[in-house]
Amino acid sequence: MFDERITIFTGHFGSGKTEVAVNYARQTARAGKKTAIVDLDIVNPFFRTADVRSGLEAEGIRVITPVYANTNVDVPSLPAEISTMFEDRSYSVIFDVGGDDLGARAVSRYRDQIVREDYIHYFVVNTRRPMTRTPEEIIRMILEIQDSAGLKVDKLVNNANMLGESTPELLAEASEILGVVSDRLSIPVGFISGMEEVLSSYEGDRGIERLYMKKNIRLPWELP
Amino acid sequence: MGEKILMKGNEVIAEAALRAGCRHYFGYPITPQTEIAHYFAKKMPQYGGTFIQAESEVAAMNMVYGAASAGARVMTSSSSPGISLKQEAISYAACAELPAVIVNIMRAGPGLGGILAAQSDYFQATKGGGHGDYRMVVLAPSSVQELYELVVEAFNIADRYRTLCMIMGDGMLGQMMEAVEFKDKEDIYQADKSWAVTGTEMKRDHNIITSIYIDPEVLEKHNLKLQEKYRKIAENETRVEAYNCDGADVIVAAYGTVARIIKNVIKTAEKEGIKVGLIRPITLWPFPAAAFEKYAEVPQAFLTVEMSSGQMVEDVRLAVNGKRPVHFLGRMGGMIPTQKEILEKIREILK
Image (cartoon, rainbow over all chains, first blue to last red; front, side, top):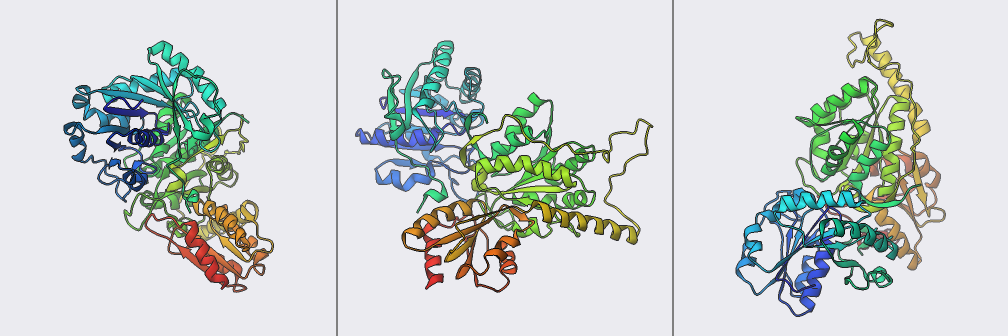
């Protein structure tokens, strides 16, 4: 993890891409790299990278969001600033892409620039989300997103969770399902992600890297 | 009960409707409820049902009128400005006594407003919206699990009384994700729909579904019949949650997302030695006035918290009927009240 200059996260909408991308960016920055995170979500109006902008900026992470993110306008316009990320190669850049094939279309805009770079495309899966419950459903979703983004998926991310009700057993259950997907598509699991308290008690898959996460995206009643 | 899965409020609305036997959805996209249409568009073909993105909101509601006339379980959904556009057909369907479910995932207004959560359509939903003397049942869930249960219930209530039933959630409830557990089988009310227009096969007199009554005496009679039905609904279908109210210093009235925030305020206030109660109307119409009457003399004061300029507070004041002061705290424009500001307001009331 954290090796490539450009890291792209796609997945089914609600798979936890934003939480994974934000934690991944934080740990990239902590590893001493000059880091930027790009919120490419033009689908989801609520709960997004822009929500945690000030926290990320305090850690020295550059945050680029759609022009109207978190305002009262739902115009899916992408800022020109994104293009600077392909000019200034001193940055490690994390792309948090919107859900499903619709969201992935936004990344296709930068496909030609991305493929010239050292990049990795992760597909985030939460097997407790409808439409990505079985290997067949996940494979269909991967094919749709690859098609729409114009980029092949390099690695899978096991992000099985039910928010506050997550357990290590969910990760084990997902590990089996993703094993089938890996075999059929020859795409390995890149890492397993979960909140620290849950992931640390998961004993399986010791050979696979892990992203221990802290919660960033919160609901109104979880705020003071 | 089945396995728990993680779902967005909007997805659950569509899934619950499918489980309740709804096979016809007509709608038009608008943030923050478009995932309802997405979900139906993906799933409806697997059920052999109908998904139509109509040419407009009022067209979608008129399609609901048609499907309901034929006796089908049918639904439409929108968000605030879109619900305004549906009002003509809503009033017609109410007059024609058609059972159907309408979902409003509210955003901030007035006008086109914004896409963030609000609760400023309370008046529209509970006091009319469209023209004429009609009512519809308005259900206000406050969690994704409850959203599922109330959508199924909305179809049952609609069929039981031949009435419109609205699910009213705010944008937060539509967009947020929570674990949800579905039943293996839903309790579905099997209504006698011999009134539906399904073709006579020349074996019976034809049925008429209409909202026009030329003769004033006949129209008044029809109105009296509607009012009698609304009285029965009020008697049987009022739903409310009263939480922590016995011996409370302040009782807060709130619904939907705001009620979730209040539950955490209750915990924080307790640490300061303040007992806060919550009356959470689950039906906004019929309004659970009896719960307020019951506790009217318990607290020093009531506080209504809404994401509006103060709409439900009028019903709270009517129900408390002057026995205690009723204060108000509201945020607008897509802003959500924080625990901190609610707690400060409670401290100020008790000073």
